[in-house]
Length: 406
Image 1 (cartoon, rainbow, N blue to C red):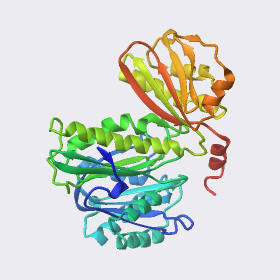
Image 2 (cartoon, rainbow, N blue to C red):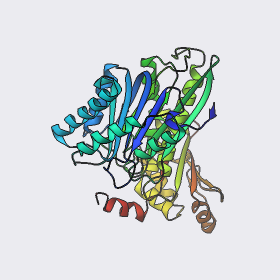
Image 3 (cartoon, one colour):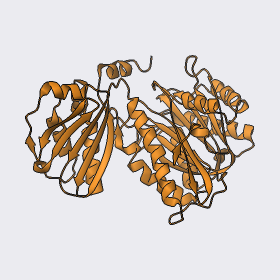
Image 4 (cartoon, rainbow, N blue to C red):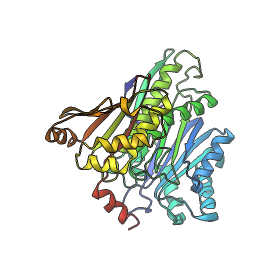
């Protein structure tokens, strides 16, 4: 596997067109992603009981097993909590795209992100769709515009793409994501769109996505909020003419590894762009009895507001980490825990086998002032481990979310 350019258009047979439709002020806010060949689709969606109209639309398409030809997404308006009109507007978006591309409505996925509770400006939406379709192409510039068009409070767009070989055939997997705030395990205010030219068995693709989400998007946290619109969609159009990838096929492990890599890197970019964040925190838990225990412990620590605040202040307050680990509902022995901080400025152990270590506070602060901080928590002599990613909690986060609607 090697990293390549191209983002969501790195794979063969995909095109995109993006425009500033006027939903946001003078920014790209609509994109249409098109597959030249029917693509099998897999999806994962928010666990929030309150789901936006586009989420229900996409869930139906995924569960029905339809192949798809296109995806339309807008930013600036979530089309969430908008009643029957929201449902009708979602259907209309799919219908307009389908008509322009010679497809059926059920072959068009729809995603929206932005402010909740405001009806879509459908005149702008419909005009924007037409403009997007007119601009469809597979260039690097189009991929970058598409990634920018789905952003809301993001400070940068997020793209990853890789290339690998399976039984002599070159396969590409690429993707783009948006997300900055309302980010928490069990998915968050995020959209992630992955494309591949691999020929993938549909049930396998859905199963693979399900297991991948657990160790990527479900292991990140910015602020503890889970949104109404969270969606991950994967389109596989088979344009590489590869062997059908399924469990047990030669090359399946390599494909699964590359697939996980793309999703994990996008998830990490979301945290790196956390609203108001100044620090990126990686929490590794090792020595757990079960994989689920390791996940619970890591997720709990990076989700804690007190832990996040301590990192903001470069305070080596390991007690907050241990406390968050303790209420994770995971099984571990507190007397066996060792906690170490690492950054480009050095490494410092603050707790060893459950006992505090006398450490140099000034040196600890130097370690914790860095942009990227890694926390290692050894919790026993088990064989399981997990990694979660989070960020600090800052004054800027409050400012951003204090006037989000304006």
